[in-house]
Length: 213
Image 1 (cartoon, rainbow, N blue to C red):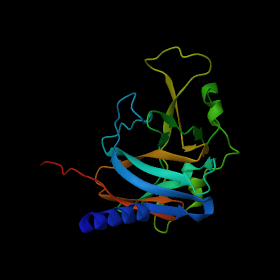
Image 2 (cartoon, rainbow, N blue to C red):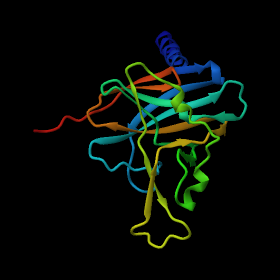
Image 3 (cartoon, rainbow, N blue to C red):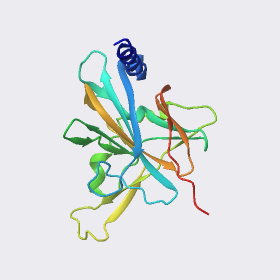
């Protein structure tokens, strides 16, 4: 009985310790796990990475508003520091889930589009807060996302026009949710650090397979 009690205390201590309080936004963030993201159509992410030098990872966290009220949650404050290559990455896709459903944060684009199909994504009054944070010796890196683009109707599903944009996310009203963050990471990277603004959420060790010679 004494051993069981000790184990329970340890488990509750670990759970408590893993929750990071974000004072300025009145919320907590708890890191859950990291895994490689599937690139098959129909899976959770709708942004696929074609480069052979990049692996897309799914980092799962739990966010909860401290006052238990529904308020705008800004996923643009999440970033991943790759100290090995001295770069800071933003997510290329963000979803939120419950037990049965998944939804995507709406992606917005930085520049006015040429195609009418992308006009709803251009909201210059919504701020990109990723740019509010700078880390000494680290370069911010935003990979453009290519969207299917057209003026009236899609003429061909085979060769649709594409328009690439640096993208960010529209804040979403939430109270508590599991959040999936999708990051494109270079294959040779072993360790990264997840941040929310300037607050460190977790040091993450990645499973990197050694190349066979």
